[in-house]
Image (cartoon, rainbow, N blue to C red; front, side, top):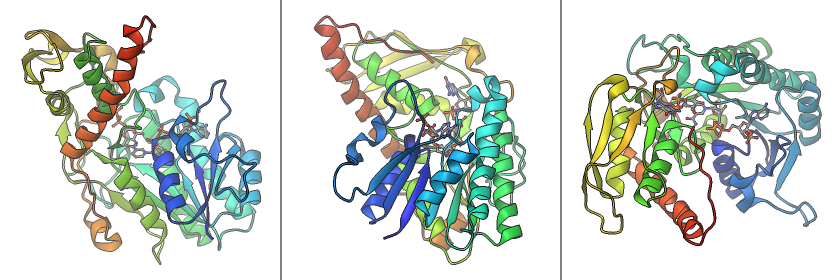
Amino acid sequence: MKKALITGITGQDGAYLAELLLEKGYEVHGIKRRSSLFNTQRIDHIYEDPHEKNPKLHLHYGDLSDSTNIIRIIQEVQPDEIYNLGAMSHVQVSFEEPEYTANVDGIGTLRILEAVRLLGLTKKTRIYQASTSELYGLVQEVPQSETTPFYPRSPYAVAKLYGYWITVNYREAYDMYAVNGILFNHESPLRGETFVTRKITRAVARIALGLQDKVYLGNLDAQRDWGHAKDFVEAMWLILQQEKAEDFVIATGVTTRIRDFVRMAFAEVGIELAFSGEGAQEIAKVAKCTNPEFQIEIGKEVVAVDPRYFRPTEVELLIGDPTKSMTKLGWKPKYDLKALVNDMVNADVALFRKDRLLENSGHRVPNYYE
Ligand code: NDP
Ligand code: GDR
């Protein structure tokens, strides 16, 4: 039985990947951070009581900023595969916490590689590094492929640039199986609530159900190549199963503006929007509602721009070229953008129906607008 160690197992990708690897018969170990509240909601459905006989999922307390902790866990687990998904993954927050982001996202990667080297596991353990399309940053060429030059535009992307190159360097210097998956944006119902897609689908559900009046967003002109996280974790696994250690771009090859994601998400609940104004003055009002369940006033303003969500330096256009992964890995996404939006909006409508029930029976349900 193969053993995998996942950093960031409590995050969106960690949860889907753990599920996938368990299905494939792996023994899965994950690193979770100590927090003052439970933080395992995304993996509670696969959690196994450690008192049970032969559990297949094991959780270890740890942190990518703590080398000795990382060394000890890797020594104990002796993994065949490490998926380094742990990171401070929010681009805008990285402008607020640049040093912490560098430590965890940059040096954290080094800690994993160095632990494997020091423990003499270079021939046994394969390492997947969660690299990102944010490395491309300021547009140099489109679509972006494995050979496109990098120009990072945030402390997050700069930290990930170090993670990318230190992975390449350890591969070349020590002949390790250490590879980068350069993944474009991927989303799902498990996506963190403050990334733009989930922020939008949550707002759509809450507005349709009468729990919220409007949503404030930032740059509506940015373009992203969005896929489904379920498809993308499959690619991570495939990347580590190749004979030769190589880096791969994982993307859908289709790009969409934030504004059009907003339009599609509202359309999913039968609400048609009319946009007007420009830049920080842009708004969207309800033009039509074809769903009798949602009593929403025509003409109501449901989207507005708040410049506090503008980034000091923005990545305007991402569109990936997945040719290499499609030909060499045989990877092909099952979800297109419409299916992704449908999955996310339906999940949030189901989630917030529960909140509406609670509110209707007199309970206060807080919501955080980030
Ligand atoms: P999430 O933000 O959902 O998850 C991040 C995970 O990292 C969480 O489990 C989090 O723990 C953990 N983590 C944060 N800080 C530390 C730390 N100091 N030590 C150990 N673990 C830590 O991210 P995603 O699942 O979306 O992304 C997974 C990885 O892929 C990240 O590295 C991200 O940067 C990268 N990536 C993501 C893309 C995307 O579109 N989703 C695209 C390209 C790359 P906790 O739950 O306690 O916060
Ligand atoms: P991104 O994702 O920065 O691409 O990083 P995010 O969803 O945060 O932003 C995408 C684009 O939407 C614009 N935007 C807003 N973004 C947020 N979060 N909130 C808003 O209100 C808002 N309004 C507009 C942003 O300016 C941006 O252009 C994600 C993360 O998962 C990274 O970890 C990963 O590496 C990259 O994707 C690929």
